[in-house]
Amino acid sequence: MTRNRLVPILAAPILAALALGVAGAAAAQVPANIATALGDAARPAADSARDAARKPGELLAFAGVRPGDKVADLIMGGGYFTRILAAAVGPNGHVHAYQPAEFIQYQASYGESLKTVAGAYRNVTPLDASLQALDLPDGLDLVFTNQNYHDLHLKPFPQDTASKVNAEIFRSLKPGGVYLIVDHTAAAGSGLDVADSLHRIDPAIVRREVEAAGFRFEGESPLLKSTEDKAGTNVFDPSVRGKTDQFVMKFRKP
Image 1: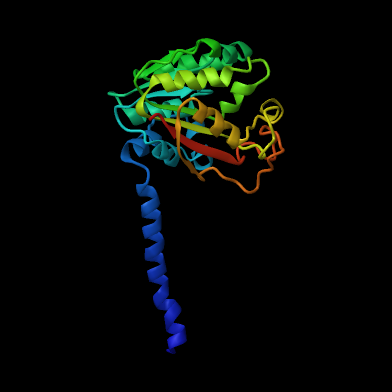
Image 2 (image 1 turned 180 degrees about the vertical axis):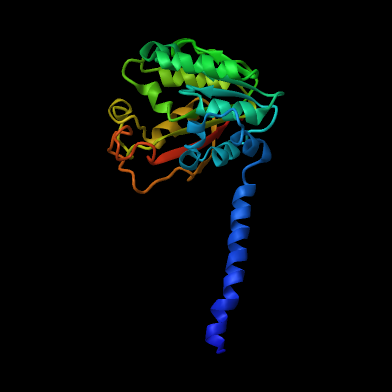
């Protein structure tokens, strides 16, 4: 056998071993408490089916979710992340699931989701005040909001809604606490009108507003970046729904 033919044969097991090492390293990035939460039998099958696209394990690892943490899931939607957070923080932790009164009034199913998820987990407390009267508990380790920051700029809400909400989050987090924001990316310089028309927001606006509330920008993750999404498309358009380009920003209270 010639040397040239021997090289690829010897290389194959080496490359396979390297691939396994990379896969193992990726898996190790998700702490055990979060991995266990993802495998929780109480999670709806429809939720688990979305994990590959939403990458909740890596996302909550980036947020630093630990057993015993006190967390607020801000604008919880259907409760996808609330369920994972409840299991990840464990019996000694707590999740405050917030569904704005305005959302419940707009769509009754939001209120039903809040009741269902809070009823399924002993360590989840439901909150349903108006955005204008948001009052989170003090001493939180994390405030997490997913695909909903842009909603703070919807036209039905007063123009100072985002600043008021950010100020309340800053007050409620303990020093060193994390504010993690995930949302659909709008084109740079697109302005706030796209919050209504496209349900997106320019990441630069988010960073500017959150830093103005006193937070320190700690970093951004490329977990949910997508080169296939067009920033000028409504996120509910079938061509991009469920696979939009999203930014993940991590802020910390000094």
